[in-house]
Image 1 (tube, one colour):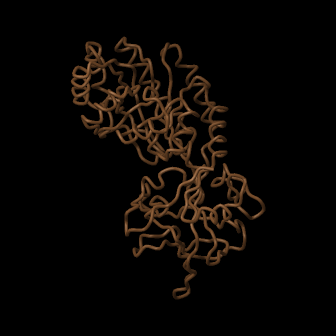
Image 2 (image 1 turned 120 degrees about the horizontal axis):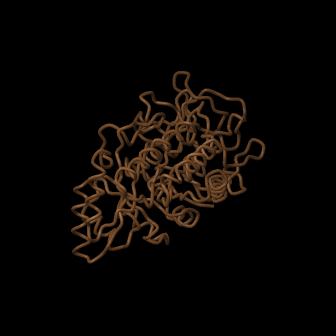
Image 3 (image 1 turned 120 degrees about the vertical axis):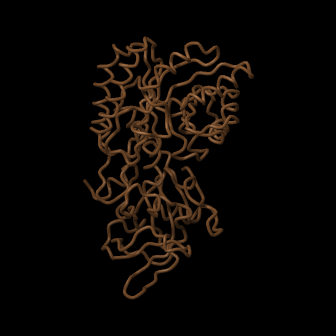
Length: 409
């Protein structure tokens, strides 16, 4: 495997030059200016094709808007997959503006406001993930007042925890979902609800998992729980949302998720559980895995500076535009450097440098004491795998700098 393959899986190179949309990235940077988020449509298609080639054809796949709510991205995702997952009224509105019908949306989140629930129900959102008994009180009241029906998935907080996820979102005490021991009673209550229909369950194990066997193990535990729940309650599960959590490589040494291994495991699991879960449609929700590797963050070197023997590359972009790349929201207690590339010198002779942003805070760093092929002032550097959790997860107003451009080519 080429050393850059885990970080440029969906992009091509011409010699030492990084290409996007068939053009040198540095050329695109000159045309649009920097700092810039560049999303590659061909890369999005390649990931969609790989997903469809490896996962069962009847497995529903939806896009989690939180990963990247850019309207052009959302317009593509809305047609490429089976729907979108939203977590606020704002995301519902963005999805509608991008042309995604409300009935192809599912709405999750532990603290939905009454106003958000009212908006979702009036708009006709396809399903709402029910995260507490109190939330059902609000939904029933809204449906009664509006004269509307709605369907819910019960989001379950299982007793078991999941391994190897960057952030665990199930097991133990969590703000997410209904504790599994209380789910049967909630299903019974829903069976008597005049306007709220029980449609199935939703379990999300965690995020950023790069281990294929761990992903399959999580799905197996969810399927075992669902089969036992159906047998115990006698209630069919129309939709089973298995969550997602597929990860992408960010750091040196990360290996990409083996999608073919995940696919083979999921095929075997669904074949095994189709009988005990007869009539159930299976669904997964993916965010960063669908869009993360199709995006580049592109910045230009303003200054090469030497300080007591150390070389600093001071960029025109920083943590205010790409907080995740600065390591300040790392899921590890050890701050790790994300990969930084020289757009026109991908594999030249490396030098030790500190890659930092323009802000007056020592937190504004993209890489400390890293090896990077030489980049002169005016040269372009790239942080790959930046298509997810970029601008929308960054403090764009910090210190009053302009927001980055975002383009889909």
